[in-house]
Amino acid sequence: MKKLILAATAIALTSGAAMAAPVRIATEGAYPPYNLVNDQTGQVDGFEVELGNELCKRAQLECTWVKNDWDSIIPNLVSSNYDAIMAGMSITEERKKAVSFTQAYYPPNPSAYAAPTADTNVEAGVVAAQTNTIQAAHVAESGATLLEFATPDEAVGAVRNGEAEAVFADKDFLVPIVEQSGGAMVWVEGKDDIPLGDGIGMAVRQSDTELKDKFDAAIKSMKDDGTLNTLSKKWFGEDALQF
Amino acid sequence: MFAYCADPKSLEGLEWLSCYLTSGAHRLFYLSFGTVILLLLITAPVALLFGFGGAMASRSRFAPLRWFGRIYTSMVRGVPDIIFFLFVPIALDQAFEWLRAKVYCDPSVPIRQGNEFLVCPAAKLPLSTAPEWIHQAYGITLAVIAFSVVFGAFAANVLYGAMNAVPRAQLETAEAYGMSPRQVNRRILIPQMWTYALPGLSNLWMILIKATPLLFVLGVEDIVYWARELGSSKTNAYAYPHPDWRLYYFLGILVFYLLMTWGSERVFARIRRRLSSGQATAAGEAMRKAPA
Image 1 (cartoon, rainbow over the protein chains, first blue to last red):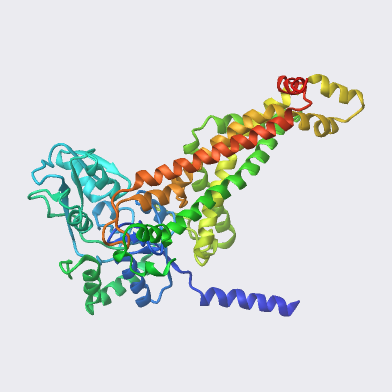
Image 2: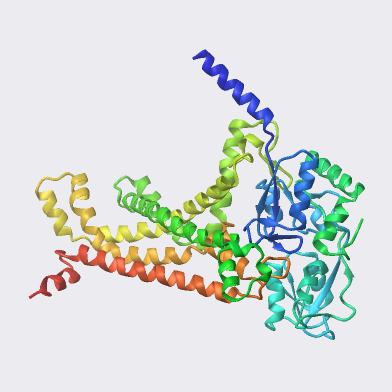
């Protein structure tokens, strides 16, 4: 009996020490090429997933991915359902009040308006954007009527079926959509390069400074040896923004 | 799935479609139909049990139990379902973690830090070390509890009404035979109430089937999630690019639900026949006269 208790305690103690809890990273899985659900495997994939896995390797962390709706992605982080967010989230002052960000792993990227015709007036009329994004905030201030959607794809769909006159989103997200639309979607003239936000970073809980430091160091090392730029080119094409 | 699916971009027509419909994401979509059916199969009996408890409590001669039963049925029935589905899983999850934190964590570290709800790793539910399927099963369990509480309240009301509908003469006869109140309940009241409860319960079952898309609201990857994900337009970043096909996917789900409710109707019709035979109700009377 004594031996059994001893063995049990030993297992309990060592298992706690040897197996650090894996870091759970949340992503939306609906924002290609940043993050998406790979249709061949059904698993999450994309720039951020590949980057996140490499960062975890460098920080010597074990990581698992969690899919979460964009709308509840910050509330679920602060209530500890997972430990970090990589979901194409721009670093803004507003969000810094709720969570802390690592340094940017993608430079400040322009947003763009896309519409069926290039001369659409985006300062009036109805403009679609994803809810709770910097783009939605920008449209709300621009004087146009904002139409919000839970996913970016639904915002694009609203323009295709005539519900909205234009869509405002990250340019990197819109580029493949505009290019592959066969002329049905074009950039709005003079409105295809609007700088917003301070770059895209990884969000962690404000109390989780240790995790933030680890990821900061890992992002720094990937910037220094150029692998981050190579990865950006792989997912965003040759014109990808570079550090 | 098939050997020729290795390079989807080179395929066309039926071959493309066969590969597309058997892709990994689609297999998860098909599995999610199982999630919905599993939820129904677990929730229905649990909710019936809740309802039975609620109905018995409402009829109890012990006043606090009776109040509990009445408050449960009237309160839950008076709150919109969706509020309940949003509230119960979050509240339960935090309550469980809070209780576990009291046991496993250092009490000097506060659980609420600013806007954060933070418990030590040992108190997390499920543990971060648990595999992904446990996290998903936990989410579904919370959903089952929320569904059961809501539908249990409705079932309690149906059963309570059904119990009151059993003719008093039946119970009186049993009492005259010298049965105790418990025996009357078990031998006379409960077997006879089903015929009165069935129309209400079958209604509830239909509503329960139609309420399953609320799983999507709770963050469970159910058929609605996958229909929206798979149906949304896909650019060349994906192996199978296609325009917005949500219409077809939602149409498929519509057919699925129609088949489910149509099948249920048939099953209920059979049960109704069985329960009505020999009963002193209008339906039982009609069956008695039919052969003549």
